[in-house]
Length: 216
Image 1 (spheres, helix red, strand yellow):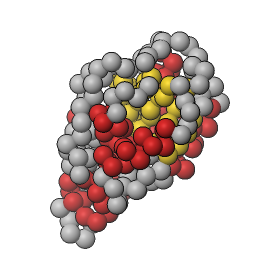
Image 2: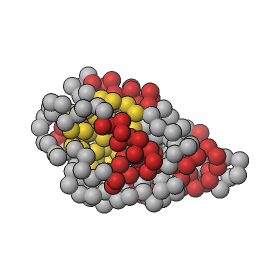
Image 3: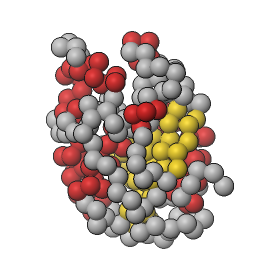
């Protein structure tokens, strides 16, 4: 189900899915900014330590089921985008309108591979590496608009510990975000974590959710 209307559809809800080492509450900042633009939003939380992305997708499906929405937008940051890909793969019948992934390493994460190689740090990844941060996420089936937002800022300690190169947001490389069948993509002058707190990024999310593209 897709729409190119300039306003959110009646009965539509935008579900926000956080990344690793985060909680659903962090997505409420973007949620409030989207609500100011007329969107109804719902932020979810999931356990990346004890459940892998596919299992978290099943939990997400259950949570969406009780919202009573006629159609759903999905917005995922980082690992949250991988959870969304598993959700769409396992439940292709979901009434999903549009999808936006923000800094999601859907092809696997160099930083995660470095952390996983350290016996002292490996446990911090939990089960997120299973069909997730080390690769193996499902592809995206065409049929609904998919927008990709990436950053090229370098703010943060991760970029100092694990340099990922110039074509990155300091944590995720641009090449790690590539998805076949994506409708549009845009790179913003923001770092990985600041993307989800940025009014500029939220403006582009809102534009894609209404128009199916980032540019007018």
